[in-house]
Length: 218
Image (cartoon, rainbow, N blue to C red):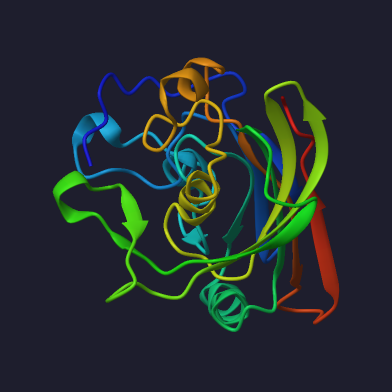
């Protein structure tokens, strides 16, 4: 992946929304990598910023660079393993909010389309009915404003770019999406209007449900 003119935001430098002995939860800014890229100029990321204070911090999941919102990290190997199993077993609960171009096919529904990497154009993904991995997204339209809709998205699977490709596939690309939006939808926002608003997991130590929220910035 080539990041041209990578200039991640520095205000806030790091917005921590929750921390205890096992977990650290950050409200990630749009434009900041979740983990460092391969090139030295792409080192700045949530992970490297957190690592300054917590050298042994561990990655649990990721958000696209352009996506903002709740990002969960683990402070111990045991916590990371516990949380990884939850993501693999799909026992977590995630909700995103997006602003998209056009009107969805119904007020709420389910999108099931297999996805795979579009290798000649990576990191883009595309629909692939031959070798693609099964992907499911549930959606609910919360508001319609002219040519645009505000949508709550709940991914059942966690494929790369899943929400972005699924919205494009139903004719409603996310505003500001440089990979999947047509020219008008891309120009309608100065960032990708996709935000990880909510995440619920089981705490790795207490085994009790714990949830995290982030206000939608658009």
